[in-house]
Image (cartoon, rainbow, N blue to C red; front, top):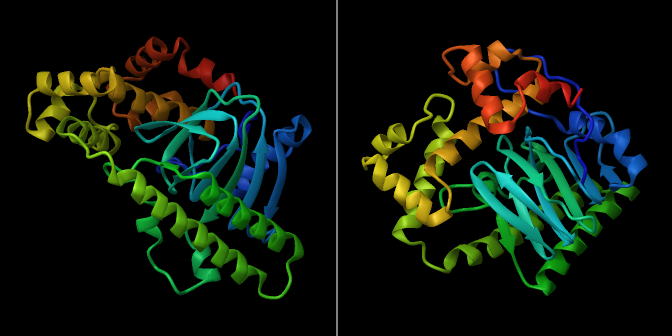
Length: 316
């Protein structure tokens, strides 16, 4: 699944965190990926104003960068495997599993196997309004609240039904016959509701322990405050516990330190901004609340082995 090997067109806004549109994402993959065979097909409803796209992907991704998109993503893993990091969640996708990535969440893929194959759906926040007015709980279906990870598992029969809905969407995008837009919309909603049902079953068991809940609260706080807070003590104070208690709990649950999750989130944001925005190093350091650009450069190089400029140039 090689979605962004080449560098997409830089987003120029200086005062906001940039979000990739469906158009920019398709532009980034259209030239290189069709030639190397990692994208087997792309179907969309409107070649001018793309609010929806369906992709059939395959192949090996040796390198990836964090992404943040203005559209929602549904990914069904048909074969092979890959690892996803979405926000502070890490999960492994194998055959018959799926993930839902809400708009605005930062995510990336690693360790994508050579036999990996997926159906991927991208759709804008307003797409459902154009296709159906019978449901209004999109945010509930897509939310990644505390304890609600992006990974969804199911049995083979249910997964095959998800594939059939993708096939139906593909057929409607190709034919574009009467009421095709409504059929695509309803197929998407059927898929979303079914994914949500399977997700709810995943969350029902096993019961979440007190340590797990503490860790989930911690990573939710990191996601909310990583631009301003970067010490374990600061997060412990927000949780009204000691830094030692927080550190020991995170280590027991994940085998990583609490500081690892804080620094990892900052680095992924920095990588995203370096590749997908025109902000310079000083502006990125300021956005991430480093006291000086040189402090940011040292931090970035210590954790990645590269300076921010070397990292950016590697995607030029």
